[in-house]
Amino acid sequence: MTEARTLAPPERRLAEVLESRRVGAYTLITAADAGGPADPRPGQFYMLATGAQWGGGSTERPYLPRAFSFARARPRPGGGADLDFLLEDVGPGTHRLGLLGAGEPLALVGPLGAGFGPAAGDRQPVLVGGGIGTAPLLCLHDELIEVGAAPTVILGFRSGAHAEAVALFEREVTLSTDDGSAGRPGLVTEPLRERLEGGPPATVYACGPPPMLEAVRALCAEQAVPAQLALESGMACGFGACFGCVVPTREGYIRVCVDGPVVEGARLRSALVAGGGDQG
Ligand SMILES: Cc1cc2nc3c(=O)[nH]c(=O)nc-3n(C[C@H](O)[C@H](O)[C@H](O)COP(=O)(O)OP(=O)(O)OC[C@H]3O[C@@H](n4cnc5c(N)ncnc54)[C@H](O)[C@@H]3O)c2cc1C
Ligand code: FES
Image 1 (tube, rainbow, N blue to C red):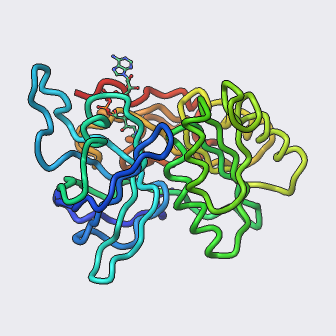
Image 2 (image 1 turned 180 degrees about the vertical axis):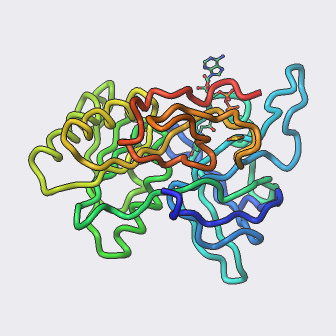
């Protein structure tokens, strides 16, 4: 995926939060990044922190910035982009970012990493997201529609509150929830299997929790379908310096922040890689 990369300005800069709103169980933050590129690639990510009050308190956490895929980017008339980030409050970093209001600074570095690449041959794109892994599929979905592709979108969430993120997509989505409170009950791999077995040749683009990504990887391997998987890994720097994000592949270890986060499924024996927990 290394060709699908927009390079980041090397320094940390301050964006301005324009809006923060709830989307079901998630928070959607929009920030004006006047100093960054206007065209990050879907699947790339930014390292985020608040401009003030990051760390401190009794535990000093969050100390390190946190990695977030951008969900959408709109070029700004004067340069740069308005960036959307979709967050789930799972720890001190996401909690603090979720408290940001309009006018406050958002510290960021990015865009980083290698994003999604084009579909192989004339295969149709099938986008598969689990939970907060939906975020990078939003901009990919928009881009595919812009170039005249007709992506199939299959999303799975824990509950109906999480599934409200479906409203962010302009086209129809096949929805499932673990508890059956919205869409069909069960896992995304069930509608994915139906689509792969019953539809035209596909390229799968997936992002979600490791068990879901592994199920998608295994299904695509079984069906000989190319898959581009957006991995998560604990990240301290985000740009290749700390080796904190390494994961094993068939050819040896890679750094998810520079060699990914999007990786060809065929390169992996398993997508059950270490997650982004407890980042200091
Ligand atoms: C490339 C990339 C893109 C990402 N994009 C997004 C995005 O768009 N939106 C989003 O919300 N997140 C995204 N993430 C995930 C996010 O960066 C992490 O969840 C981050 O660690 C959150 O920081 P935190 O301080 O809120 O939580 P942390 O304290 O870092 O905890 C994160 C998760 O790990 C679990 N955890 C904490 N401690 C432990 C422990 N000791 N053992 C096991 N599990 C533990 C927590 O329960 C929680 O689920 C992305 C990560 C990567 C690598
Ligand atoms: S996060 Fe530091 S090398 Fe990848």
